[in-house]
Structures are given as C-alpha cells and as structure tokens.
Image (cartoon, rainbow, N blue to C red; front, side):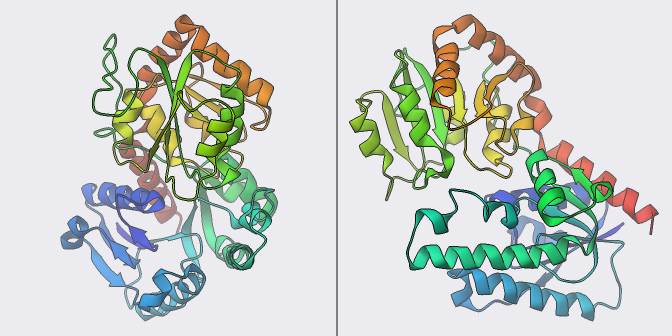
Length: 380
C-alpha cells in the first residue's frame, strides 16, 4: 500500500507529532510505502520514507498563524505536482485544502473558541486579540478541510461530538481512535512493589497525588484542585508544569498548602513521577484529547478526572473517579477524600488500572489506523 501523510510534525516528543510518528512506524512495519509532506521529521524515519519538506520562512516558527496558512498553501502545490498518487492520503486538521481520504482531528478550534477560558477572554490585551484571530482563522480553515475528507478520525469522544455538532461532519463519516502511550516509558510498578521516590524531590511515606499540565492558565483547573485539597487532610500533591508566570504557588500559599504542594516545574521524568504517585488528578475545564491521560493510564495508577475532559474514555471502568463538573469543588473534594482516606478502594482501582495498562499501546493505535487505510483503499 502506498500512503501519503500531510502534517506539520512527525516527531516522538511532540503531542500530535508523536501520534504521526507512531502511525508511520506501524505502516512501515506492514511493508507500506510511505510518503510524507511535513516540516519537521524524526531522523530515524528518513531512510525509510519519501520526504517532501514544506519550506517555511524562519520567522513563521514563532508566529503560528501565518505558518498554518503558508504550510497548507505550499503542501497543496506539492501534492498537485505528484504524477503518481498514493492509495491513501491522510491529512491532519488544516494541512492541505485538497480532497483527501482521512483527516485526523486532535483539536477542534471551533469548540475552543466557545470556551469560557479561551485566551482572548482571560487576556484582554493584544496577545488575547491575536489568540482570538488565530482560533477563528483555524476554525474556518478546518471546517473546509474536514469536509474535504472521506473519513474524519477524532482522537477522543469529545472531539467526535465537537466535529458533529460544531463543524457539521456527518456521523457516518466519523470514527474515534484514541491516542496511545509508549509502554517502554509508561508502565506500572509490579504488583506489591512500593513506589520509589528517591531522587524525585517527592516526600516519602505520604499519600501522593500528581497533577501535570500547563499551570500558567486556568484551563487545566489547578485552582479547583488546590481549593478542594485545602479541605482534605492527609495527602500531598506533586505539580508538574512550567512555573514561570504561574499564579498557583501564590494560591497554594494563600490556602496554607505550601508544605503539601510540591511544584516541580517542567520535568522530563514524568513517567517515573507517575509510578511514584498514588493517583493522577486531572479535572481539566477544557480538553480535546489529553495525551497525558493515556500516559497515566498506561502507568497503571488511578485517575481522578471529569466526564467532560476529552480522552477520559481511556480510563478503564473502576480504575478511577469521574466527576460531572470540573468546577464543582464539593464533588472534587469528595473524590479526593475517597482516594486518600480509603486505601482499600484505591488499591482496587490500582489493580484494575494495571490490568488495563497495556491497552494504551501505540502499537494498537497504529493497527487501528492501518486497518482504516486498508478499508478505504478497498472502497476506492
């Protein structure tokens, strides 16, 4: 099979780029011929794929709006120049305006534009105005691109509903394929083994939750977590996220939580921190499809999240707690108390989470995409 992929990044360390990277790797393992139109590509893939790099002015790497438009325009010209067409053309969001077979959506800008926590509403300044323009422009371009695809793959159930209700993609053209995790990096501790927090700057002999995400914005909802935590004695929280510009260390101090909240700044050893923690706390106010949920699930720890958090479907039944409203401090407090004060329940959740950890593998995600490639190629 000859597969063409159009996307900005195919890189293992870059959210959506990681998904692209794993899909390409799986297709190559199946003996497929892979042609990519991209800006950044992992070096280890280069010997095995056909590369059409999209030339972008250096200044666009700092200003995303023109980068998106220029990339799609130049990708269109590259695709139109091909004399030999691939069996399947796979696009990501708005990376080409031409007709294609599959479009993967990790994020729906039309949905983000409606969020109370959109940057333009929390930053009433020039930066907020730019973010509004960026979101609205992408929403317009994406709408056209999604309707050019035979099938649109949503990376979560949340994204699927947003594509259906806000973008108008017909239900019979929608599929859901969740993101995965690297099981060589994210894996559970063996049953009965005690977490080792040595060298991680984490306290020993306490119940420890972990929160990970952008802590410079209210979107991830760390403020609600801290307010709930103030009402629950007996546990500590590790917070992973860039500290510069974050208001939450001051909030933790105001709530009297300085000794129990451990701000770790940006860390690359998040997999080890997951294994050293008793549970993951992630009741995000708006999330399209959080890769970190798949990584936490693969680590075999219970997860506290909200039903509205995109990607929450990766949490196995009985392997965590879901609250209805991420802003409901009372419900969040109750869920935290259940995890902290009921070790038997936490142990049961952990056992279930471990049993389902391998379901998050990128291998399974790659297999689902390749099966879709084969299905659509047969219907040409």
